[in-house]
Length: 500
Image 1 (tube, rainbow, N blue to C red):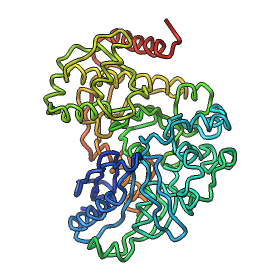
Image 2 (cartoon, helix red, strand yellow):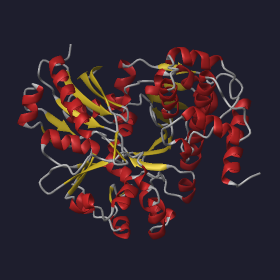
Image 3 (cartoon, rainbow, N blue to C red):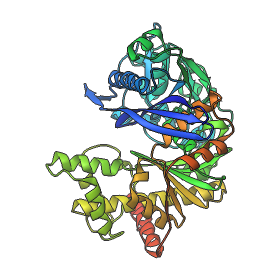
Image 4 (cartoon, rainbow, N blue to C red):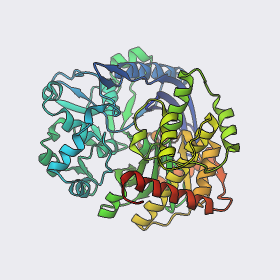
């Protein structure tokens, strides 16, 4: 048997963090979770923050567990997380306050302020990024003139901040940098024009790194605290978790769409060049950078956040739900009775999601879902329709043919959502792996270390032979889906005042 090497993937999500251990060989890949820890935001003085020190403590505990599982030796470490958020360092390298959460309200009014200086069509033509009110560029404009930003010497995206604490070296990994709305996807470099127009200092950002680049070795004090035997290299991976997740899509060929599901659904295509047309901007598609020079052409959809918030509300109201039983009940509920626009910004903030979903149905003249099963079916039908619209729009805007849809991430476990997505889109769905981000993370590390070789096609071939996948056929008549899609489009028009 060929020898394997052990790598650790630090995978930080919006609700929890994990440290995964992968044993990788040229023809083998086995992944296990060794530590999971909560990611609980904290509101202080009216501002919602990430508890970044608690996350770092979870990372250290996870690396200690990884070392125990690997006999004290790791061949490498990679870090991925959510996008757009950052920490500020002073000239001595000290953190200036906890990073602010992207769901905080501080960016209210910032998009309008940016648009007054740099019209949306010009900003999109320069960066190709989907308009989202929490994009880093809006966070920075909102922070202009504040003491923290004025005192800052360096800005590090969340995974780069963790990497800095582990190694002492700073850098800006490019897949996450592309979510700042300050990167030109054609040059794969910063856009000095955008920064100058908005009065933002690109000197805050350390040099760009690409996935596979070395990011440093673990500091001696980190080795001592985790019990690891050095040297342990940290490698830049697709540090935006979706970039790693797309590496972890087990596709054969190029004619596939992907849906990375979790708190968000990110649905789109992998392209070799950005789509920067006005039609693409109007459709709210983003051109984020991927691994090996690719572009992740996708739309952000609210995702399972809708269901997660419903579950949280029901628990707070003294009516906790058993998720498997709830999904069984939802599968028996009336299909497509009521649907909502899963991309509606009205669902972005937390607080009483079941009520907001019912209100949205009432505003569009549909029956209000009342029971947990009815609300859950509404959420999953609506997500399947949002997936359908994103895939169809991406095909039309890019000219790329699609013959299959891959669902990766936590939503791959949701068999009802996978089946509904296949039926809504009318294409076969391949579900899995659920841990695509961690797998993409370790595959990039293993290739950088010389354990495996080849392009993305070779990495994905290894996934197809080592990971468990499920297949869903687009059974049934799509007429009901067509009608429900029209209902959402009509309801969207009514709420916008654009149709009767």
